[in-house]
Image (cartoon, rainbow, N blue to C red; front, top):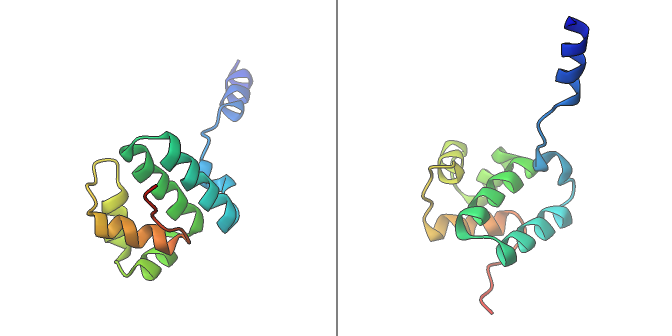
Length: 99
């Protein structure tokens, strides 16, 4: 019976979107789709995923914030300033556009 439980545990695994965002284009398409169809909190969550996909250290450096600040801003209970969001978006190769 323990082998059956082990097999079930191997089948059930968490899905991390960040592992599937392999290129800058993947990241940009993901953020564009979330911005068009999601809520503001969905978009901030998507920024977290995209930053993890690209590398938090690299994104923090390009955005001009500390790695710790980036994690805090994009945490589930984070409340990032618009300026921070704009810097992160730019570091991920995107622009904020109003249409």
